[in-house]
Length: 401
Image (cartoon, rainbow, N blue to C red; front, side):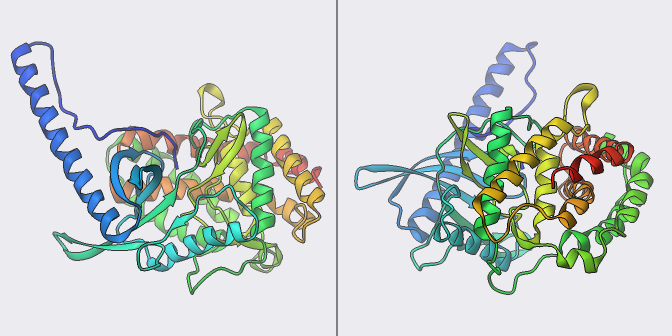
């Protein structure tokens, strides 16, 4: 979800100024350990690049901190005297291969339909879009799925938890989302991969959150979640009833990006030059993708405003999206009245969607409790803001017809 690039592998330990000789020894050990780790990583990735891809010789590797789910690296290769950059992704253990195939088929479809802001998937020597690298683990042998993508030019300026781009960039982001939706509308997906739509996910969230709340520990995350779990569960249960399944089925569906935020965009001269991270893409209602984008782009994260939806940004985003959809004269067109009526519910559902990731990730991977408590607190505050400002939000959205 986040987008902070250029982080090197670092081993951390505690070094105090009290014993300079001991500190020097620890620093020397750290340097040695770091060198071993980086050397081993370089050898491992060199093996993958040479065995599975026809990209030339690997000459540099740098950890790419984009994303929380998969591990990625910025790599550079040398072939025929020409240097080229790529992104190499190691998919998380347990990622279903059909999900990867859906993501790659979508990325292949986009340029064929005229959308050229996404990276391309680099095929392996045998023509596949990913390599299955056998590895040995304590629980037995398994394969890690590896993919290589073309490198997008541009800057990483924002992240999902620091999303307040300029007004010009916000307008452009809405335009790019509209362009993406217009481009991919009508594509029916690939293979037999199907994920639950948000309307089907919310009842599952209720069960999972209730189970996590019962088993909460004593960390700052656990305590905050336990304190607010009843409120969150009640909010979720109320949201199940609208829109109805029948009404939701009639809304335009397409392959949503599923994680459209400023941290997944590249910028050149204040314009968007690239859109990446399609690993949350799935078939769902178009207005859910718009609601999720509004949640990401238009909510404050700092100070007393944390959790507030900034309505002037909502207006700017929606107006820009609707204008592009109307001007292009595409089959999809602007958000319809039923979609706009559903949009506040989709904003609420999208906040629950991100909260579900936060809660699930915390109890599955056990990351830093304070970091994830910040994400949880933001989501709870946004949920409360929505409850307190529901009528105003509904009135605002309905005027964007």
